[in-house]
Length: 494
Image 1: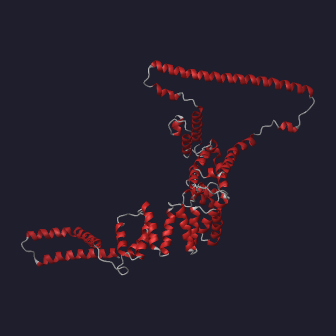
Image 2 (image 1 turned 180 degrees about the vertical axis):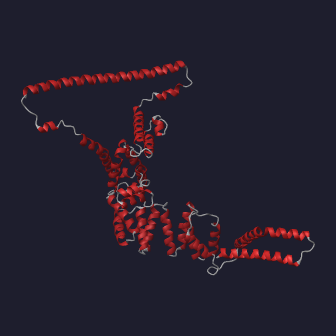
Image 3 (image 1 turned 90 degrees about the vertical axis):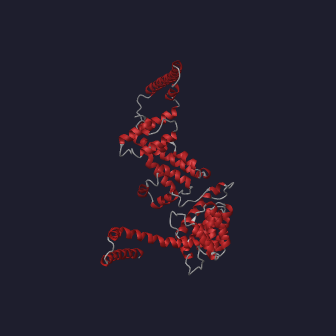
C-alpha cells in the first residue's frame, strides 16, 4: 500500500489536500482505538508532506516518456541520473566539510581542556556546575508538548487583535493550516487553548465560526464539548456556527477608520441581543443606547433598537430605526418586512403594501409577505382582490404550514364576515367537493356488492320474470350494503 492509497488521494504537492485527507482518515484511525493504523497513517502523512516540499519529482517525469523514441527516453533518464549524482556529490562535500570543521573544533576543545586540567588539577567542580550536564528529558518533553499550544495561543491573540484580519475567513484558514495544528498529540491542548480564548473573545463573523467548526468539529463533537467545557459557552458557539445568532461585520469595513473601541461596541451589541431574547428590556435599552452613541451605521444594531422600541410600544422611534436600516442597506429584507408590519399596525396600509411589493420582487413565494398583503387588502375592504390572491397561491405547496396566512385565508372565505359574490371558481370548487366523495363511495359499494349484482343480472336475463320474493331479497341485500357505507362515512366525518 502506497502513501497515497493510505491517504486515499491522488499524488499531489498541495499541502492543503494532504492535510484534509489526513484529518479525514484520523476519524477512522484514532490512536487509542487503532494505534497500528494510526502509526501507518502518520508515517504516510509525514512522507507525503516531505515529498510535497522536497521539489524533487523524479517519478513525475516517467509519464512524459510514453510515445517517445528509445533514444529520447535514454537521454531523459541519463539527465535525471546526472542531476541526482550532482546533488549527491554536493551533499557529500557538505558532509565532509562539516566533519572537518567538527574535528578541528574537537581538537581545540581537547587542547583547552588539557590546559585547564594542568592549571587546576586539584579543583573539584561545584555541584551546580555538574547540574548543567544532567539530562532533563521530562522537562524537555513538557516544553515540546506546550510549544504548539503556546504558538497557537500567541497567533490567535495576534490575529484577533487585528480587526481587519480578524473578520476575514482566509486569515483563520491560514492559521488553521499551519503544520503544528495538524499534530494529533497536541489536539486536546489546542482545543483547550481555543476554548479558553473564546470564553473572553467571542466577537467573530459567521464565516470565521464555520472555519473553526471545520477544524475543531463543534457540531460533530457537541457531546464532548458539553462534557469538557462550560455549557453556556458551547451553546453560544453552536448558535454562531449554525447562524441562528449571526451578527454582521461588513458595515465596519465601509468606514475609513473606527474612532471608537470596537471590541467594547461589539460586546454591547452582543449583550443587548441576549437581553432582548430574555425579555430584559431595561438592561437591553441601556446597552443599546450606549452602543448607539458609539456607532450608528450598523444595521444589526438598528434592527435590535427597532425590536426594543416595538416591545416597549415606542412605535415612532422604531419607525425611525427601520427607515435608517432600509436607507443604509437597501437589500436588508428584515428591515422592510418589520417596517411593513409596523405600518400595517399604524393603519398606513398603502405604505405597508409598497414594502411588501418590493420584497415580492426578490421572493414571490414568501408567505410572511403574502400574509401581510392579504391583511392589508382585507383592512382596505378589497375582498375580491384578496380572494383572487388566495386562489392564485392555492397551487403553491408550502414546506411548512404558515398558520397566520391560513387563518386569514379561511376567515376571508367566511360569508358571514365578508359578503362576496358567487364566483365561477367557487362553483368549480363546490363541484369537486361534492363529486369526489360520491365517486369514492360508489366504488366502495361496487366492491362490496359486485357478486350480488352479478348473480341478480344472470337471474334476470335467464328467467323471463323473477318472483317478487327474489327481488325483495336482493333489494334488502343492497340496502344493507348501503347502510354499512353510510355508517362508515358518518364515522369518517366525525
